[in-house]
Amino acid sequence: MQARTSFRNSLLNVGCFSPLKRAYSREVESLMRNYINHITKLEFLLAFKIAFNRAFTLANICLAFRGAGLVPLQPEAVLSKVDVQLRTPTPPAAALPEAP
Image (cartoon, rainbow, N blue to C red; front, side, top):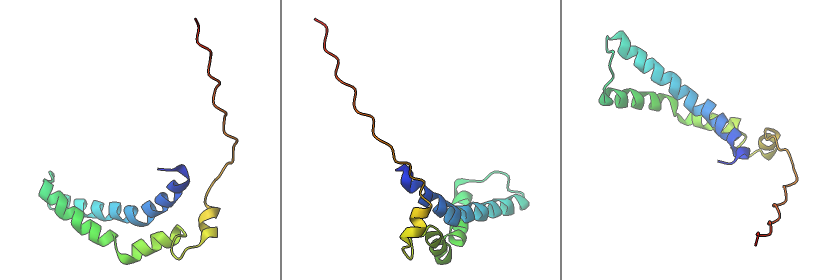
């Protein structure tokens, strides 16, 4: 992944995956309150599906993209969050002559 695009992903992480983490934690806590100390694959999938459906709502997804300045497209909002440092590329090293 390019460094200049990672900030967009972090905003999407906050907007989408952070709610998923909280929702999944609530599901696991609910299982623990019901004395389930070992989660099977099926229980994991059921808990994850519930958490996913709670976290990945249209509203959360739209807010994440809006927060990233991607929808509606706001180039100035996106570019203001980019930390670009221009630099002159290092020229390639000259080839050394081979020893006879």
